[in-house]
Image (cartoon, rainbow, N blue to C red; front, side, top):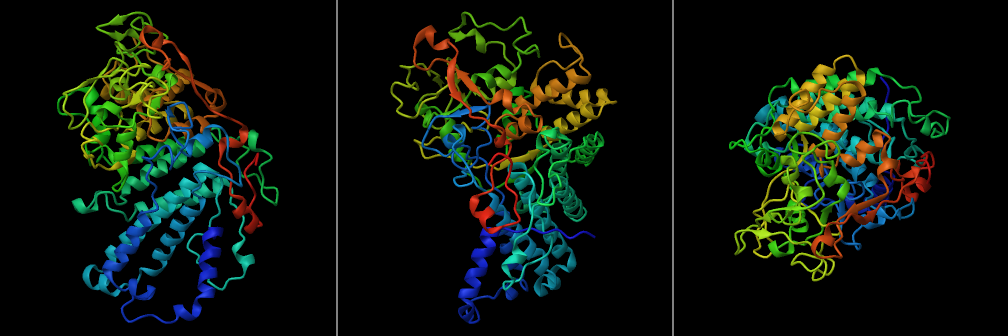
Length: 582
């Protein structure tokens, strides 16, 4: 069996340096302290160690200073130039100054997971209480987390460095810690194998309410589905643009031979999640599609959620998206391109629907926003809409984002929408900063809606079963409350048109959930969308507000397919090859 190697050059050097410098002190353990050996002989300390490994699962609710996945694509504008996202928007990142740098953090998580896997066996207290079963489950959770961290690395940085279960000793010579990157396909094969191994042991559902948020079989299979979907996509599957991206031995990091069968593997992986028959698309008891779509994220632990992060800062997402007059900071703003992507209520895009108009008003609302599909109203706050904040004196607010409006630019300082819109998807109406109220809920990292779309896309790309792909695409549209393909005025689609329809649906259904950034790259359409982005004219009042103007822009060069490895890592890991273009 092939052995793989992983390393966090930064963390390994720092940890080993401290161990060497402090060895005399580390040999002396106070009577009231536990040694690491003692930790893995007791149940509670071992569980606390595993909980710490879970902490390396990133909270993606901060999309301005912690993660760039929505603010650096054609989804939102972030109002505040002081935040880190602005540096990425203008292309101000390099190996010397790379924002949103997670390479080291994920490798720290990988190292912690590996240490747990290697040392939890033989836990005397757990064996006495639960036998080997609980130990095996906890090892499977750590294995899942390690695989997940590897996937987070390869989606942001491309090929990773793998080491499997090997632990480098503290006194290992520096040359042993200088390991090369594996190819992308080797990384995928390793991650998939680890997820499969974890899935055979992990529970199908959480044992108790306290276990919600822990890894399950469904979570492992869902992440496997995403990994294989990416691996089948044009960015990684026979991409000649990366022909010169090779190892020191001249081996291509990215496959140069396209393999159609990868789509079959991706389809099978998604179907395996569906066939568990324990998840279903969330629908509000009222049948209201707006409430159904909003409830995916606002109703905790619903049956659509597959993997979530319990601890998160969604209260901050709520604050930043909400109107100033409703106790928010008024600055997470969909761009016009995203607004235009939503369908009309007849299920057609705005370019084909007779219902769409950019002239005139209906009951004080610009006709651009009339007759749109339910997901539009569950996601976009637009001028003239009625908005209810949490625990405020008035029952509702009429949105006014024009220049002189109460939530407009004139009186807002930096706290104003640059596009004339705000996000309301995954924004709790119960949260209000002025009243000191926030709504706690899990952050959804994987859900069934994504799996349906993964399955549909993989089937359509593989070919030969468009009817099955269309079935799952239509299930998404049915829950969204719009006509399905092949019904009413929406014609059935197949072939290339089906693939385009799935991509359009994915853009809407998964908006602001950290998918679009990776989708446009793996589809190799990123160059066409990283450009000037538009919004309404927030420098004007009245009807002049409803003019499309450039509101934001995105820097692009081919190097931006991945983030660079830091120069610190390159200097110390002499066998590391930097990503192309840096």
